[in-house]
Image 1: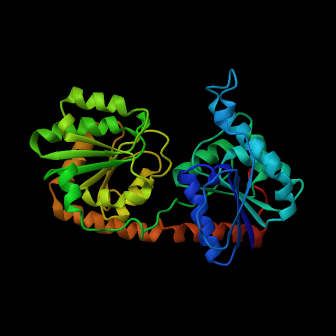
Image 2 (image 1 turned 60 degrees about the vertical axis):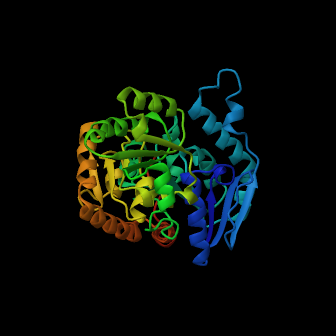
Image 3 (image 1 turned 120 degrees about the horizontal axis):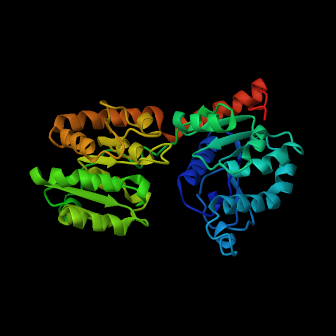
Length: 382
């Protein structure tokens, strides 16, 4: 089997989709699949054996947004970025005769529709969110099969494109995120003897960190607690102001950006990990990382989060934008060490079963084999 993982940002940016491509490529290569990553000109590489990397020029969205009238055309500039990449890569893609071409964004569907007229490759449409654009449904029949990062996302894709993706959850490396003894000096430095609640992620409004602040305010009146916020983003100043208004600045510590490969020791410090997203959350990498580290998680009952956190088994689900519910669920865990330990153990087991890169690769490979062996008709009929 000759497979191409096609995504312009894989070799030019860091992020969840980019990690998905790299890790699936490694898993496929380890299974003897001839694997090529086709990405945009950039310096990002992972030293994975038997993974060929080929890059092509493209016009970055940041450059396009400098054109008058395009500064806030986020969807359009992403599409043009991908079209410029597809134009430069198309001769190579046609010449290589890949059995499978796996794309990660709807923006690549136009390039794949062109390719379907000039090559016999099967197209896998990978979905990680809702990057839809006007007129995109005209190109959906370029895909032979689709995969989504959660059942929640699969339903979004089904409603928009009239096709039914398979669910292939995102993954993490359980050898990177694993249970470990808390670093005593680190804990003393950032939390003292307080019980700790950890959030790790971007600081943007829809991640709902403001509701965690609102939840900590009443908790801090009866408990010695510390909210640790690992991450950066445009919303940080507003969150800091909110903490001051609530009178809990001394109970909140902004840790700044912490790279993924340095996060595990911070999860080890946490008595509870919490996330309160109320939009755009089709999966929850943060929850899988925390559970892999055997930490109990309180997350919002929204999007793909309930597919990651097993309510009452690996953590609790709280109602989105409901600080009181978050406070109540967090308090139950802070007050019950045995429950935290049980949830943590079950969380680790759940991750090892469902959310490792090995599990992801097996599901992806099954989709590939299905389309190659059974000759499924293109989806959607659009």
